[in-house]
Image (cartoon, rainbow, N blue to C red; front, side, top):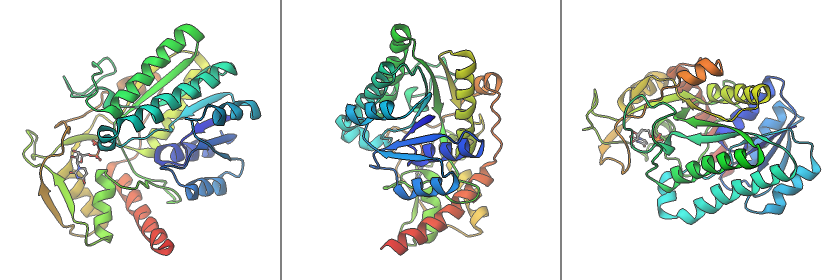
Length: 336
Ligand code: UDP
């Protein structure tokens, strides 16, 4: 059985979907539902009735250790974390206890039960301000916010656990994740939402929330920031390949996940107008603190070693995200 922590959230749920559709369907979801949604778990269980769900919190050692006693877990995919940069600056204690302590509890339970394989959801935020571009896996890791620090600390803890206890981990460092299930059963659902694509699309439904571009005087082709946008289902597929790699080679490693194609905020906005076939209102506002002008992945290692092939175009991802926003809008309206 595969334990997926945090699979009631955005990326974890798409990973559970991807694994299910691939026939890796013996899945246990562990989530405290603090930011994830029980509705997402129910949708996943409709798709794959074998999925089991435990509501628990990694901060409580007993919650997670009882899972390993009760179920026959072979490997772990670990997403459960808080991930809002701004919140991590204002309230770092939340991030260190939730992300770092929570992961230590998870890893300790794994070691106690002799489960020694984990795929970990890391982030490009561990690199901090880019020293060169595109960023490869050897780029210095100097995070500039507590969120990035928590993820880097976990990577370091995993190194020590490998040396001491032979725990093997694959860390996947994500760049900008967008998109939704192609059948629009699940999608991105954050509260509050801070990300670019859902914010553009939400402004189509909610006429009072005008979309804001954070700065247009960066030293880039059109003055707006450049990022590397990767589809959530392509990203999910990398987890399947990473687990396969771990099972075959029993080796700790790290991979960047991005497409290596930079797109500016303006370009994403223009594609969103194409997808929605609407003129979307926007306003240019101040730069957001801590936003580097360009973040681009060198992801050739994942392509070569894991044989990862991101397939979806940005247009496809935004199209699925738009369809999902319609579903979410109706869902939220109905519950009000
Ligand atoms: N962005 C924006 N308006 C928004 C949200 C984001 O202009 O409402 C910009 C942001 O400044 C960055 C890019 O879009 O350059 C991607 O931001 P996001 O928060 O989606 O991801 P991040 O790069 O921070 O992980």
